[in-house]
Length: 451
Image 1: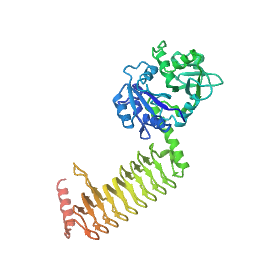
Image 2: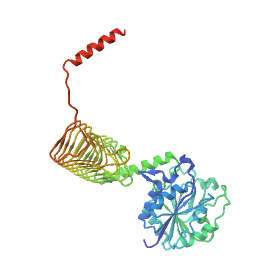
Image 3: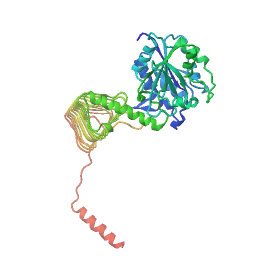
Image 4: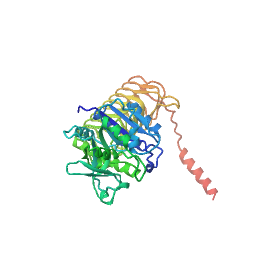
């Protein structure tokens, strides 16, 4: 790809059908805002310029894209899509390449499609504009494209302005266009608003090019790729589209999903080979699962690394910073946060490990918790290699348990325990013979007296 690419993303609209205080394009799919899915595709295509046109709820969009080095320009009044695109003229004044214009709610636009559009502009017939079309199952109110057998566009019409014959066309406008920068700005400046909505329509640049006796062409993409998202229902449908594709990819790459439809991946989940994933497992962002890991049902994993041969769950929760090293295991109702479980170490059930480092081969008994927070600050716990922590123990951080040490069940440990030592903190047990029998007799008599 020799042509420089600029992404011009339109995201100034209110998105009122989403019924949300969050901007439409920031609603997530697989844990990533849909706008950022789109930006990732442009980045992979090598876009050297990325500009987002903002308007309503602009502060939210600006905050989301600023860390990525994406620039924003403001459309103060929503006067139409051509007017929105024109707002980027100054920002791209020094750019001399191909501008790809699209909407921010089209998260599945593929890098390959962006490249295909740019390549089509470079074909010998040198079209002035390349439009991405699609054929939806239900064309509904999409703008229509009328093209000849040679893919040359004869007309592009918004649904409101289309005749019954034009509405019968099945080829629809996705809103994605490729135009050379030197052609784009003069065309946008010529767009008028003599239409049913009184708006400046972006597709009109195709008709202006046609008046100039310039050729514009359409290439097609599957409906799923250019799926626009305007409501919560459409967001849920888009999530399903993404998840189905990601599940298929995971299985094709060597993972076993017992009930694929119940497993939910994040946009960046990494899954190794020979991984077994049982039903109802959820992956949040930032997860790496290495080879031969087993993840049992109803586990929730985010921001965690699970190394080769480890086992998770069922009903486990791994939070940000959790690391299970080779062959380690967390079982049912175990939660880890910013904690490392060393090779072969086990926390089989009913345990919380926060801000902790557990050595190789250590065994964490049921009901153990690391008390890592005093209401103001977090503190760390270190558990040595081969240590054994008895059930129902509380390790009050900061505290260190030495290699091979044993903590007796029911202990509240507030001081370091040296290697190979026994740590025990319990009140002295008392046994009073016959007390229970006398108590029952007394209470039974009292109950009879009250009747």
